[in-house]
Image (cartoon, rainbow, N blue to C red; front, side):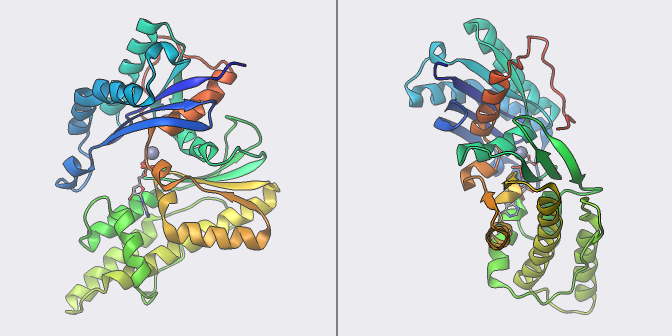
Length: 333
Ligand code: KG4
Ligand code: ZN
């Protein structure tokens, strides 16, 4: 087969990101315009502003990506775009841009599930070896997925309430850490001590998670300490919180690895950037003699490269979309 160059378009939340990836593995160029600074002052992503910003910059970001790659649209094999899950207005901008390019340049159009993209960010690090377990941890998801072939996603567990990313962001807000809180909690946890007692949630036989309990425990703890006139030791609370999260995620994931007898573990999604989570899984997988693949830090947050990487496998399976492709803000894996 000739080399396949996929143009990946990601605009599901607050990053406008375009990539060209060769054969699902080799990132040629990625151009990303992040809106974090715009949304920071509101303490979270404002959907209306996000979609408007995508609309303003998407053509410039596409052009910049092609220029940096020294390529033309004629050199592109197919166009892959996130069509869900995500913010409706933001998704629309990417999908409409992809359809327009596909129509104008007569290229195949591929609608990609954003969460499949997060999983395939790992394919840019190492080729997937099936069967595998993937722990998907992001701002909207906390799931354990079993895969025995490309694009086959069997969900064996998920959160029953908040996602782990939401818990990081809410805890950050309670201790007055700016948005997005996850990376800051991660940094604070490195200098703190595990001194606060927090509950280990859903410590049961299922593969499901629950994070609203820890979140409430942190809110109550901060409230009570304030009422007693005690100062919160932010870094200690960050360490205590992160340790509980790590314990919850590792316990169930490592059990799934045993039960499903897989060859490797992948971690995917924005929270996979967390150093505590990476270190503990690294240690546990080494002890068990199982391969661990984690995305490069730049591929943890939303990016076009992961969409193009996943898009390659849709292309190989001829899973093409037509111009009626619609966004699906609550698309499941
Ligand atoms: O995957 P993502 O970029 O967006 C979604 O698709 O949801 O994930 C964003 C989430 C946010 O909740 C952010 O706080 C969290 O990932 N995050 C982290 C870290 N970096 C990003 N959480 C913990 N530690 C980090 N280092
Ligand atoms: Zn994401």
